[in-house]
Image (tube, rainbow, N blue to C red; front, top):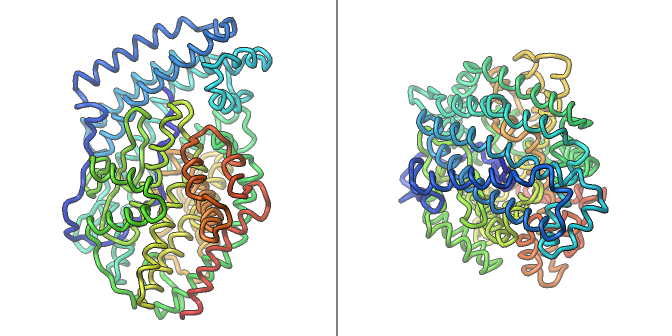
Length: 607
């Protein structure tokens, strides 16, 4: 199946706010994709895709013999098929996300994925045969204008060249995925969606219970935190089995493909060098003491404690005014922030609100967290939220709309070139958050509320950089340890606790049930080693925003929009060059961490 490289799962696994009447919340209308799972339009497109895939198989074994014009025509048809199959798969995924606890939706999704896997198997030969072409032979084919347009796609396709296997083995991996990885991930998602936490006799979904970790009342946070721990512990054996199985599944595939490290395949897919990621991780871990440790010591002082309990991590400041933010206000705030930077971006944001491209209510059974799914260039992106009225929910809206405007601007590049690697896909989302935060900070004149806003931003940045690098370290240790044999529940819990203590620092006390909190982080299973992309994006945006704020580069808005519109046409060095930035330089990541430290410096002056 053709992968959708623009499916963005955000870090917002811990929504904030309280239960309230937020006004009418939008629910998406998937009719722009298909009318219904059993709709005539969906069925017709599926049949058409299967017929076209069968015809496309006539190229099998003949790619090397195609002249330049025929080669270009074959890529055009492959892109058209990618667009069609991507549209079908997007609808199935979004329909299921609306209620992952529904057996009917689950069956529809699974049936669709199984048929799509067959389709993917029929098309698989094409990219494999391209990658087996000699460089000189390929260069001759790429001289035709039709083929030349797809040079960025072919360039990125060939980075996997040395890790690809024979046609039969590639098809076997693809076919087995539906009864292997895909099935285990579905089991995880359905288990998570069906979990209920007993919080003082109130039966809540996991998303609702996690939301309470930002409640202003400590006893409420504590009760929710312990209920979450108990609930996760009850399924810990299953989550341990799923984690072990998928880690082994990845290890087997990595061995066959000859990847040096578990993270290497993700780095290659992200089109970023191992040493660049290593430098990011090293810079972030080296700054743990100057960021998270220092901030949480300050927060303990604000809360009047010698040590913070783990349920205090996202606690609001005691002096801040707490209120639920109506949806209309959240919409106006985010839209205004985007408009202040670029009216063109704001006009795209307006479409999301006006045309039902957002699903906001936190319904039982709905997929947790938030994401933006780009679907395909011929349609438009969709955003899923679980809006619960807190300041972090407003930031989540800004974040996902960043993905959304990026998708829309890049769409003219076409299905094969519009997608970006995960590292760069977070640029627009984090930049959108920063715009919204800066707008809120500029409006706030009350020093107490201003400090609360600044502290909230620091916490978001720590969650994005420190926490995600800790997650990355947890993944690395789990995958490395799995090589020696199946891990026990206790081993995984010990790894989790060690990385949490290292990253969050001595200001925290952790009760025993916190050791199970690794189990709900879906990123570990959905997209292994995804998480460092958030830190990559945040540090990159810190540097990018500094260029914007200091007016160091003329015509910043135009250059920024060009960067988003490029999609996957350019690599990170080329995209950042107009701003005078280079992620391969050793001090680049340290500069990003300095932004967080600067905010903490400001907070210390107000304490």
